[in-house]
Length: 268
Image (cartoon, rainbow, N blue to C red; front, side, top):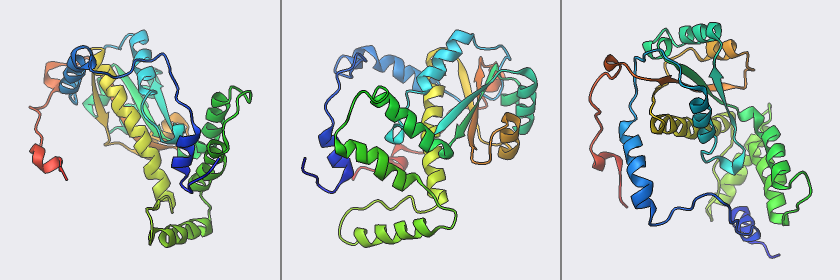
C-alpha cells in the first residue's frame, strides 16, 4: 500500500467503512432529535442550590454511560468519572469545594479527572478491543498509528531531551508544510487530557438535562484535596466536579447572559 507520509491520511485510506447499528444523522433529525436537543441546551443552567434528593440510580448510570460516548482523541479516553456515593467521602469532597452550596446540596457529585498517565494502558485496551483479542488484523498504517506514532507523541521524558528533539523536528518540518506543533512538553499533554475530559463533562451535563435533572460544573475547588479524598496519584488531575440533582427555586442566580453572537462567532 502506497503511503503519503501523512499518518492521518494513510490510516484513513487503510480503514474500511463501518456500518454500525447506531442511528445516523439525516434530514429526519430536524424533526425528531433537534427539538429535544434545543430544549436540553437551552434548559441546561448552572444551578447553585439543589434540593438534596439523589437522582435514581438507573438514571444516573444512564447519564454516565452517555458521557462515555463523548469524542476522544485517538479513542484513548484519558479520563475517569468518579461518582462519589459514600456519605463521608461526599462531605470531604464538598469541603474541598469550599463548602459551596452546589456541592453541599447536590443529590449527586461526580469528579471529572484528566488521566494523561493512563494513555498507554488505554491504548493497549483499545487495541485489544479493536482486534478482538488479537483475532483481527489491521493494515500497517493503522498498526503504525497506534504502536509507533501515538506512543511517540504521548510519551514524555523526565529530562526533556525527547521533548526538545520533538520541538526541533516540528519547527524544521513546519517551515515548508503543515506540521503538528505539539505536544512538546508536559503542559501540552495536560491540556490534551483536560480537553478530552471536558468533552465528557459537557456530554454528562447535557444528558442530565435531557433526563430532567440539573447540574453545575464546579471549578472553584482545592484540586490537591479532591485528589487526596479520592486516593488518586499525583498524575491524576481534577478537571471539575459536577454537582447534579433537582434545583431549588433560589438555585438559579440570574438570567442567562451571553456576549453578542458576533463577538464569539467569526465567519471567515
